[in-house]
Length: 346
Image (cartoon, rainbow, N blue to C red; front, side, top):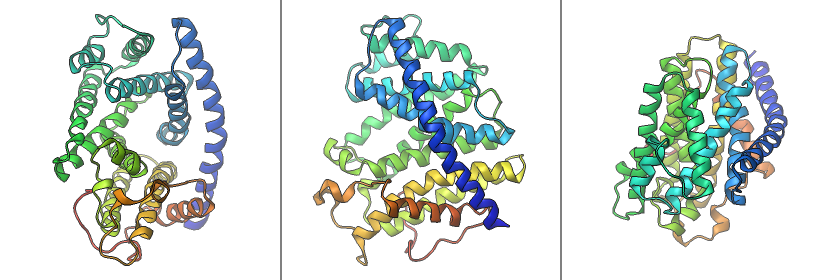
């Protein structure tokens, strides 16, 4: 019965994702262009595509996995909110990464947008999107607290440019930054989230941030950013820590007050995201081989650190990994992938 249920769920999720991504990407592109016309400006190509691609992936994979708990997809107003969120998050990343705003200006545009005077189109668009989201949120007190968490974690992430930063500091920054960023999104759905659901959103955010860092090892080295993946010395131990995160979020899902079929849909979606990270770690394990330690990642060419998820072998590995780990009570970590627990991910 497990084989039939899980295989059916995996196939339906994969098929739905590809169709939904194309549809959502088309809608988001048209919607962002209409916002540009209304404000009389234009985003740079990189930012435009980041907003559209982030939304087109995130809505069917994450948001609709949560709305499916209540046997529905995301409605039009929820999609509108989510798109405005990615406008804000993408532009805020630009403001920070490009040093376009001082810390004081970042705080003002984030928490006093009604009094902030935009100096350019990007700031004008951010203010409009940010104020729109504020009008849409019901629990403004909790939302404000979450925004404070996002803002502070973004500021704290600047410490990752310091080569002397400790692994514990990196860990806290990583999971707070990713956690709050994804946690913020549950406010944009119509249904109030229970405490276990909120925990699930936050835990998922930390995992997604870690996955992003796994895929950005080469880029982060070039930019002088210290992350858990580019501080990694043992890919097998790292996998063990990663699997603890996976088991934690599975336990949280099991506490949700919904039918098993609804939770299975959410589990497959989240485990599907986790499978991408597992694939990246698998590539690092191949680089390490039977050695006790990884080679110096800074000396490896870019090609060795780039993970191509469109390769058939990686896609097949993801599918097998989802099947193996989506089982509700599956807790066994294969020793071929893990050789002992070491702090650094947890």
